[in-house]
Amino acid sequence: MEERQLAISAEQITKVYKLYDKPSDRLKEALGLKRGQLHKEHYALKGVDLSIYKGETVGIIGTNGSGKSTILKIITGVLNPTGGNLKVNGRISALLELGAGFNMEYNGIENIYLNGTMMGFSEKEIDAKLQNILDFADIGDFVYQPCKTYSSGMFVRLAFAVAINIEPEILIVDEALSVGDVFFQAKCYHKFEEFKQMGKTILFVSHDLSSIAKYCDRVVLLNKGTKLGEGTPKEMIDAYKQVLVGQYEIPDEEESLLQDEELNDLAAKSADGKVVKATKDSAGGKGSSKSGGEKKLSAEVLGINEKALEYGTKDGEITEFYVTDKKGTKTSAIIKGEEFTLHMKVKFNNPIPAPIFAFTLKDKHGTEITGTNSMIEKAFLDSVKAGDEKEVTFTQNIDLQGGEYLISLGVTGYEGDKFQVYHRLYDVLNLTVVSDKNTVGYYDMNSKVVVK
Image (cartoon, rainbow, N blue to C red; front, side):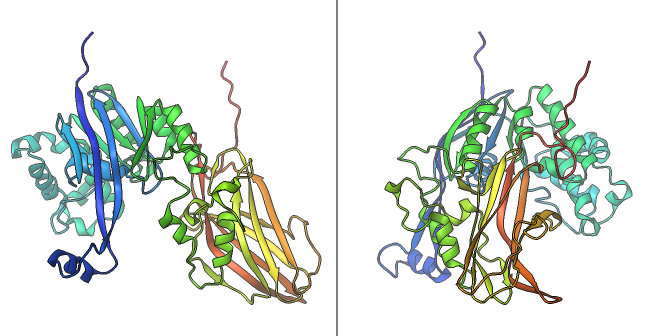
């Protein structure tokens, strides 16, 4: 049996950043003007091992801040590791930061030759590849105009075309397949398929779990700079979903997803000091402890936006808010197709004739997707007195496509014919919908397809 050859071998790769409270501390420490260290160490990567064999397509998944982009930049030579050993066998093309190295004053043709030269190609070799690059970019005569005149879509098309057409032995992709319009994305994925069929080595980072499941032979799961595991796409996607909902059992010696001190510090901060109790209570509940069975959750795990826009008379005030999954676990990530509940606690500082409790859900571009309120649902039409507290829940299935969404909350009402806003919190919660199958548009019709 032929022995497989390693394309990338990373052993105990560590990347540490020194964080200073102020720039002067960096200078003081460098000059030795103060005893002791003035920095905090942040581990972007902590002893990560990675072995990728020639001809493999390996995916890397993990939450934001898990170290995915850092490990790619180290492999491509953009960053130097703090510790560990790295060996790369083959020419790399990296789709990390599209357009890096482009001169905005040059036209498209000039930038193609500039980038090709930087990648080590001769002018003759670039001449041979030029037509393929132009055909792939498909930006017409704009290729003869300065890049500063391009739209963002034209710019990424050209940058992607240059990067994808240099015939690498190892292709490294970091979310770059989502550039441009839907037709260009289809072309990118087709090229990706060609690379795979040619037996190229591919290292692929994406939040698109359906692409990870479709293209990857093996998947590595990272969390906060630590490698949690590797295995088949299905195994690691299932583990990733557990991480997202705070239910992955991380070994004691690792930094716990739910016990991170820096993240818990976030839960104690608020833009105006008036929702601090809400975020802290919702992050753990009163009197919670490690031994009490309920883990203290950070603001990040709960998806709380501590700089959310808020306004209103405060006659009725939202004091607590969070999302739970079908098991009743507080989280900011829900698996597509499953039930989730939005919780809101409201304290009334003055009597109100008929308060209305509402929520809306928007995509990350600000488009309102859906929402409802207690009046529409005919769930509560009573008056309240000063000092009353109401706990409101909205329970529904999530059939939206996988992605990031924002939830806004409100307590409003009518006093006579006048509409009143008592308390509104805009984009106060982030909801991640985890999906390994996305259909077209905003939501899934859950079609049953039969082919005979």
